[in-house]
Image (cartoon, rainbow, N blue to C red; front, side, top):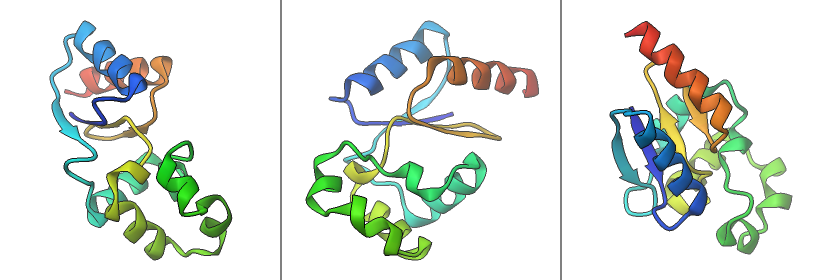
Length: 122
């Protein structure tokens, strides 16, 4: 499992505690220090089943500063991927990358089910 987070984010801290309480083995990656690459984002988006716009941190300062609420609709996916890969703070977090699934944002019930499914498939 790969766990991408921003250490100062309280939601990320909550998600990390959730993983630790369940004894989950994961690799931690600071999303600001090591941006996801364009290729990673494209692969994760495909595995997540989510539209690419769900990978944007809509509550972030960068999102607002770049007026992305208005601009995203006019951008194609290649341009959106380039933008996400340019700054980890634009990416919604935390992200949990499992063998068969990718979860974006922390929803405890969804993460619990994904961990259970992942354990059954090992």
